[in-house]
Amino acid sequence: MIHIIFCISVVSFLLLHYLNQLISFDLQIWQSVIGLFILMYSLRMVKRKSIFPLFLLSFAFFILIFNNRVSWVDVLWYGPLEIANVIVLVLIIPMVGWVIKHEPYTDALFIKGKSFLTTGVRYFGGTLAFTQLLSHFLLVGCVPLMYYFANSNVKNDNETIHYLKNTSILRGFAIATLWVVTIPSFSYAVEVSGAPLVSVMIQGFIAASIAFGISLIFYRVKEKKLGREGLEAMTHDLLSENQVVPCNVNKLLLEFFLLFILFVGLSIGLHVYAALPLLTVVPLVTLVGVTVYFFLKKAFGELMQNTKQYFFHDVSKKTEELSIYFSVGIFIYVVKVSGLGVLLIEAINVISSLKFINVYMLFPFLMIILGFLGLGPLTSMILVGGLLQTVSIDFIPELFVLSITVGSAMSTMLSPVSVPVVMISSLSSRGKWELSVGNNWVYSFIIYMMAQMYILVWLL
Image (cartoon, rainbow, N blue to C red; front, top):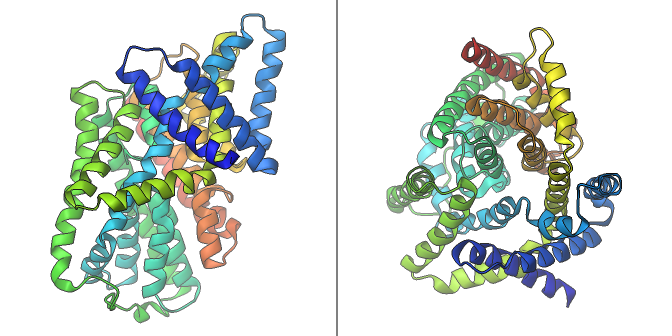
C-alpha cells in the first residue's frame, strides 16, 4: 500500500510542479509536503545506500543548530523545492525512450551503418557516433543497447575486441555529455551558468568532435599494439526474422531523424525565442512530443500502458536518485540562506590567486572527486553548480559550462562506480577499474589539457 502511495506522490509532485507554473494559486506548500514524504520513503527503501544523502542532511542539520539566520520552517517548506526543476527533468526525460522503442529505429540505424563499419577503426568510430546519437533519446540506456549491438556483431573474444566494444561505448556516452541538450547534467550546467544555449552546444560539439578524433587515434595505436586478430570476424548481416525488412529502413531512418530534429529543435527554439528556462523546456517538450507521437501513431493504448508501467513500477527503482536529489536540494538551500557562501568565495579566491591557476582548472577535479565518491554526473553538477549559485563570483558562462562538462565526461570515464562503467562491467565481465581508469586515464588527461588550452587562449 505504501508503495502505491509513493507512486501517487511522485505523480502528484509532477502535477503540482506544472500547476504552480500555469496558474496563480500557491501550491508550493503541498508540493513540499509531498517532496518530504518522497525523501523519507526513498531513504527508508535505499537503506545502506543512503549514506551520502544522510551525510548531507546531517550537515544541513548541523548548520541549522549553529546559524540563527536559517529558519527550520523555511527549510522544510522550501528546501525540497530548491532543485524541483531538476527532479522533474530526471523523472520526465526517460519517457522520450518510449518513442525510440515503439518502432525499430535502432535496427534501421544499425543496418544502414553496417555498410560503413568494415574495419576496426570505422567500427570504433561508428559505435562512438551511434552512442552519442542514441543518448539524445535513451540517455544512459543507450549503453546496454549499444553493447548488445556490438556484441552481436563482433564475435571473437580477445583484448582488441574487448577494447573496441567497451571503450567506444563508454567514451561515446561520456563525450555526449559535452553537448547533448536532453542529458540532464548538460541542461543544468547551461541553466545555472546562464550561458547562451546555441553557443555552448556548438562549443561542446566541437570539443566532442576533437575528443572523437583523439579517441580514434588511441584506438589505432591500441590495435597495432594488441593486433587485429578477430576483427575480420565482424559480421555485416544484422537482419533476422525479428528485425525490420530492408524496404522499411529508409522510411524508419527518415522518421528517426525528423524526431531528432523536432525534439532538439523545439527545445532550443522555445528556450531561445520564448525565453523559457531550459530545465522547464526540455521536460515540457518531452511530455508534449511523446503524447503527440503516440496519438499520430494511433497507439494511445500503448502510451497508457507505458505510463502505467513507468509511474507504478519503474519509478520505484529511482528511490536512490530521489533521496540524493532531495537531500542535495535541502543542503544547497541551507547553505544559500545561512551565508556560508562567503567561506566558499574566500577559498576560491585563495586558490585562484596562485600563479598559473584559474578556477576553470578546478571544476573538473571537483567533478572527478565526487564521481569517485559514487555521485553521478548530474548529482555532482547540482552540488557544484548549486553551491556556486549561492555566491557572487564572476564566471564566463561558456567557459564554466565547458570546464564543468569536461569534468563530467572525465568523471563518467574514470570513476569505477559510474553507472555506464558498472553497466559495461556487468555485461562484459571485465573489471571496473580496467574499464575506467585503466583504459581512459591518459585519454582523459589529454582531453582536460586541450580544454584548458582553449580556456587559456580565451582568457588571454
